[in-house]
Image (cartoon, rainbow, N blue to C red):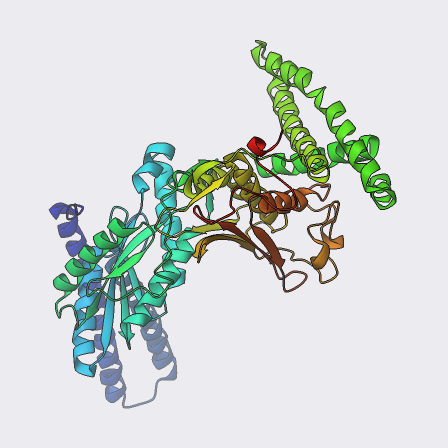
Length: 558
């Protein structure tokens, strides 16, 4: 690892001279104070006859001189403290630098040896930080380093120390740990803290860090040895998986070591452009709400449709199919008109904004029409799948790529965890992306800004298990048993982040069933988040070519 050069000799000499001068000022002030006190004693001993006026005048002069000397001494002492501290601080992050940490580590080793205690050294290196500088520039990179510093300082204990070791590397000293697992907990806390998204300019950053740990006295009893071995462990962690930690002595990880951060292309870029500003996001919600209200009220009549569903399933299905076809007709001319707007050469600033607005409304309308079309096909047993052998890693990657911009705009934390082995199944790639994308979008929609969303992928026997969880508004007890029914909306979610038709989860369940799987929803209640678990058969399970509820592959239909 390349270390930054030592400070220039001239700067070190200048700092040493300034410190020496301040020390001389402090000593001189103390000499003056001692001399004044001696003069007071001598003057008092020589007074034979009381002379009140002269004594008062002399005392006043002595008090003023003493106060001036004391003020000078205090100022010099304060300057000496500032200069001493500044000599060991990193200029950018304003935390101690390498030299200070080496001294502190040496002192900590001496104390640990005297008291028979342990300490840990954490060597932290940011993953893919070069992409931040290349994408955003070095000025933005400096802002990121300041942000990282703040998060590190808030992640450690009051008795611990953090320093910038050089570039995008930090050294953390954990004093007085009882066992290596204590250090592992702090390392995991640091990784989780850095993983939260942050906004720098027009980009949302998701940073990870690799951490190597060495333990005193297990891995060495000298400062240089502990740092070198923590550095070695850091490279081992980085080679195994980004955003992880490893001990020099090979201590096992404490956090589900069978799961790891997937190397998805959608998660390998730390900086992603912000799709919309906060003002534009708010405007978009208002526009979508108005457009959806008009669509529901003018074309579908949501309440009438619910009543029609109660009167007759068949009549409702036929009506939805007709509506979907009628709504699909205007989409093509609208799309052509939007493309023509982009070809017009003009300085009018409203045209690009109008084009963007139309494109967003068009995408939203297409999504609604496709959902309605799916519902009608489901109810008429005409939903088809185009099955092929697929690796679920590519499905997850594509779904994350589609859903991440909305999460970034809402500054929501997002974690993905998958097994290291390939997950192969027979399914329709587009429909599988639709399943996972709908669940992720649903989680983002009903999770507040700054909330957390998790996607965990595991295997159980001959099934793949996908779990999407969040800490959002949750699902009320009365709504939970009917959450997959068409047009079902929990009372607390109506109007939240735009009006929906309540058919997204219905489509998800039908697609999961068509793949021979099942889906369940759980929630502890209002405000306590929700969890959706999808189980799908892996390749090789008998009967995987035939879906449930009469839904079949296209090759089986005539």
